[in-house]
Length: 461
Image (tube, helix red, strand yellow):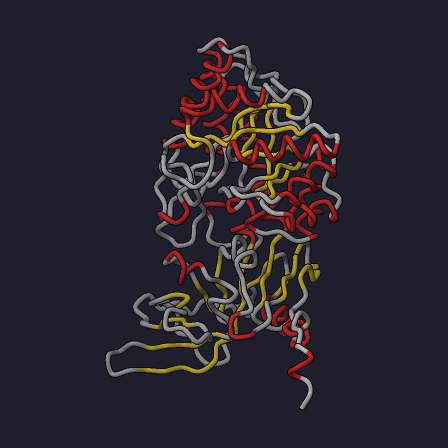
């Protein structure tokens, strides 16, 4: 069985006798009729298989490295043993996703007060939540402290000092990891690299020992637990991650010489997924196995106790689970041979092509066998920007009225969506075992004006 993050389509995707795309046993043509378009469809079984692949890989890595007694446990379990999968919530967050995190026994990364609020409202255990961010507000830090044992991934000295003051005032003790800037760059777009030496994120590697000394000077308010690093997103290569392992193991050795034990080692996430046939991301299982084995060996070779290992897959768990269904509208053909087909969505529900030149794969959900590799059809969005192009030379002979499926849209589509041109966000349905449940309702025209306010002096006519 292939890893979900190496597939273009969800694991339950099939084609019906009517040549329609089925997901979770459901006809996407019928889903579009029932829920409208654009429509985000999330496949539950793809999420489940991705989580299992990551967990199985972690366990296999521990075994291969000769540490078979340590498996993949819960995010809040004891230190110096085991491993945990933390779902990176920024990829896709809502109450239903919080419930999935809880049901599958995952930990959860959040990067804002809104994501933290959603997680807590969904019933996620605070002990399994990790709060990230490079400019956390006092309100965010306070909510984390008051929620219980939320771990704060501290981004710098200024944040540490604010956290110390807030914890003292609230009579709480903050559990923290320090985010380390390791000076490692992955094979990805510049806008989604985060580990380079001049990154806006984290504490420079050379400054970490002094940062930890500062933590130790705050014993009543700060509990230092370990190290975190994250180098970026959509990486296909294992080598940068293995470099992080050695860098952090060397840092842990230096801290040990200071008398400080690293209890948690968070190697971040960022593993890529397949958006096109040409993409060859490392399978989730292989990524997790190689990282866990490398970490165990790196710490053993330095005669250090193995910390509790954390990985933070987000895109590679939720990305392949998502499919966006659009309806094709007007077409335009030019003497140059270029052919435009307008869809009823675009950059407001998927800004990644305009932002990162991201590539995608499309099929005609209502005519899955219709694939023309020489077709010059370009799928464009409905928004008032020339850059609102979803897929150039899509390779499918789309006609007005067709339903078009864009694959691997589970990550960052909803979370980066907007109301540009005063349009409502699409609905999202979760499908499993021939059942479809609405998890995000379609925004209405009333939703678009619900936050508007008119000054009194404009209402006196």
